[in-house]
Length: 247
Ligand code: OAD
Image (tube, rainbow, N blue to C red; front, side, top):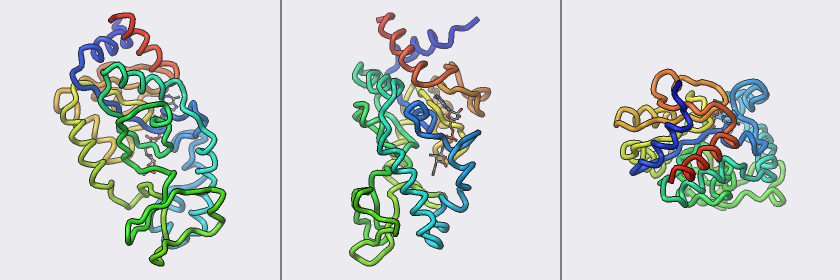
């Protein structure tokens, strides 16, 4: 039987350019709920009511209240051993970058230096008109959604449904997916595009795909070469140990 952990460790050891793509499962062990599945955020807050740009513009108070709850949860979260394992792989010179769909800043908090934030960062607000950015300070921002000094309703600096991915992360992530020879996909359900196209794109360009997830996804039976089954906070540190043993 193939030892997927060993195969993955060997592939990373040999990699000229390894990249990670992460999703909400990466932060599940930091007590941040995922979006889909039982107990997921979208179960209580349907995305068409709380996560589209149209919903925000039509009912900013309602969406803002939801957002404050989410950000309060993020504020107290800390990186888990999975985040530290990816930071360690970067320090070892193996991982060139993390492309994350998460907006929680936990990769940076764990010490990862090159982090492409595909869906933005919840620590910030942005003005859709003049692009002015302000930090989101829970102690200062009340129940009413904030307005920019230019008079426009500000929004969390995250990608809502109905909005495009900002061009810089879009281009950088595509370039990384095209040039990497190993792609490590962690804790994503592979449901949301264009992020879900990055591993497919990498595979088409010849990359070896390692997937770390507690469940199988559409990737598992189509593009995954090595499947690391289990919580990322356990599987990724184990992977790092195996790489160190093999050095
Ligand atoms: P999802 O909530 O769709 O999927 C989370 C994935 O993590 C699932 O495949 C789980 O099996 C897996 N998982 C859960 N716990 C895990 C653990 N401890 N270790 C490893 N895997 C685990 O989250 P995303 O795929 O990130 O976008 O969702 C993508 C996008 O959909 C989000 O960025 C967000 C959302 O709508 C926007 O808001 C634009």
